[in-house]
Amino acid sequence: MRRLLSILFCCLVWQTVTPAHGQTDSLAKAPSLLARYVKVSGGLNAYAGFYTANGIAARNQTAPLGLSGQVTIALPQGLSIPITAVLGNQGASFSVRQPFNQFGLSPTYKWLTVHGGYRNVTFSPFTLAGHTFLGGGVELNPGKLRLGAIYGRFNNAISGTLADANVLPSYGRTGYAVKVGYGKPNNYVDLTMLRAKDDSSSILSVPQSATQTVTPAENLVVGITSRLLIRKVFTVELDAALSAYTRDLRAGEVAAEGSNPVVRLFGRFYTPRLSTQLTQAVQASVGYRDSWGGLKLQYKRIDPNFQTMGAYYFQSDIESYAIAPSLNLLENRLRLSGSYGIQFDNLANSRNVRTGRTIGSLLVSYNPETRFGADLQLSNYGISQQAGLRPVIDTLRLAQNNLSATLNLRYTRQREEIVQSFLLTTTYQQLSDLNARTAAQTENKNLNANLTYLYQQTVTGWGATAVLTYTQTNLPVAATLGLRDSTGTLAPTNDGIVRFYGPTVGMNQAFFDKKLTTAFNASYLVNKQMGVTGKVITASLTGNYQFAKRQTLNVSLYYLNTDTGIAEQTFNELRGNLGYGISF
Image (cartoon, rainbow, N blue to C red; front, side, top):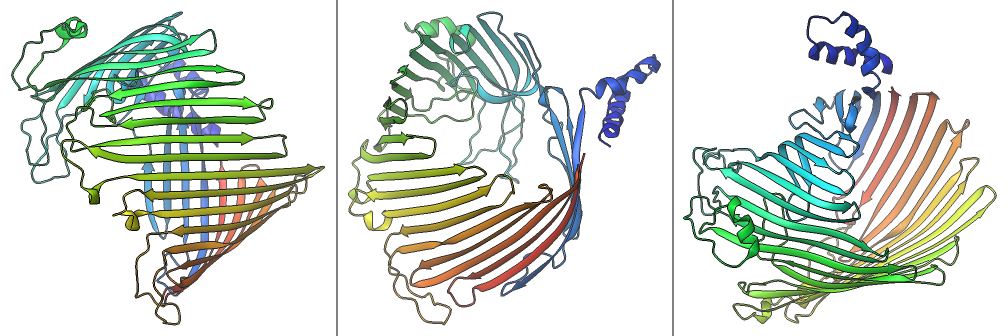
């Protein structure tokens, strides 16, 4: 079947693209030739089942049945066309999940890559950084030379109307980008430039409003990107860019005089206007790494309103410093790594307040042997505000600290054909509000613990799983009344603590040389909040039998019982399903 579909598709493609004259010999060779490059795969599934519910309105068909299929056509260069179809008593649908309205290819031959169609290419983080365009381009890397150029349409022209506020108008935008560099993929220096401009005549009129203003814009960005590896232990990373962004091409021209060498060099590529803003962005790091560990220093600064038409989004108006050390001890059995940094905004002192953040993290990993290991991860994030253009009101001052700690313990025991594992994962999170006026409404704590036991027989296919779960959340205390339990009794005042705990067990077994696999899972979870106790019981039984190379039969049974502890919110559901599948 797979071969037949491949031949049919190949014949259809060949018939479409080949001229009518002189086809006799070519048609004879077309199926065998294109079948080597065009792959067709997919499957067909049929199912039927039942569903019952008690206590709530039915959330499914009482007797669902249907037929579904999927076909994937794989073409060269990693292009695939998935086609799906569903038919049943719950509705019918047909879809091609990768239509040709956005089609593109980037074939590569040795050191040459050619781009065509809809593409997204990255030259550097602050110039051309993954923005989708419709056009063409080329990248050449002969030896250590690094060259690249693209040209295309970055935005479609869309005319908005006052009648449909959901349609965002935009001008048609075209642009190009070039890259010139030297070096290897992990040791290079690149110079990049991007220029894009809106066509002010691409749409007739733009409806303006107080919340939406669209004007034709222009952008020129020049940047440098470098990754240097010195003596195999020192690393230097640099990304810097200067952006001249004109927000309204209709604004008056101004003279761009001064000693800025970048302006003098690239000024011929754009016209400065009253709406032009010159901003810059830079991120750099210096690191050292050896067998014992390493140290890395990082710096980032992005000016307010920094923008480039080659990327979709930047977090601007920030400056940060960070240090990230690491240490390997006990012949790499003990590893320590962490980081600490500060970050703040309001670089131009134009905001009402200035926000500062401290970021710290620590990771300790201890693996004395293959059977046992432990990981401890700590992180602490603080945020505070200082006066900017205006003093900060105490009741509105933002001053918080987020603490998170995670501990993972694992122990594995393996003998002959049996593997046993014990896993303990515990996470603690705490939000502390340093503003006494708002702490009662914002502070919270969360504790989560999971103890897991795994048992598996590698030969027989028999296995079991047991999990104990406990979660406790301390929310801001609020005197909340009005909830009633299942007996109709009024619940006591909320103490701000929510608990969720219970066991989960599972078993799996394989039969008939593992052609038949079965699994059973069940859980009993208790939820306590605001003085009300609820519970959730779930159980499932599944089986899958492969009676032919590409054919399977599966059966499943699911049960759900929910009792929230609140009157008129108790229900249960039971559903089953029988299915058949074939793949090609």
